[in-house]
Length: 103
Image (tube, rainbow, N blue to C red):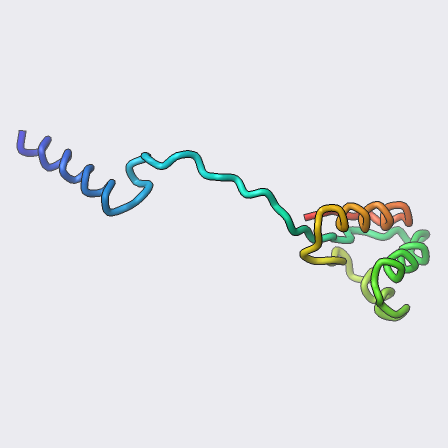
């Protein structure tokens, strides 16, 4: 009887001291992602020139920087951009021959 009373009191105290410990919390709200990163995964050798041109068209990078960007992949191409901008960049890079992911 004393043990049951201690267990009941302990459970009530843990609910007050540790929010969420009692399981009284509702479902967690899922936040919709608003910023995306465009990652170039791979560029086939036969598509390098076209991808470099696409990179230069989408950014203000010089030829040398665009070439360095597509070496040593995977690399983030654009960071914290809108979904529309990320999808547009992905479409243009894929048309040039690159394999691209949006994260």
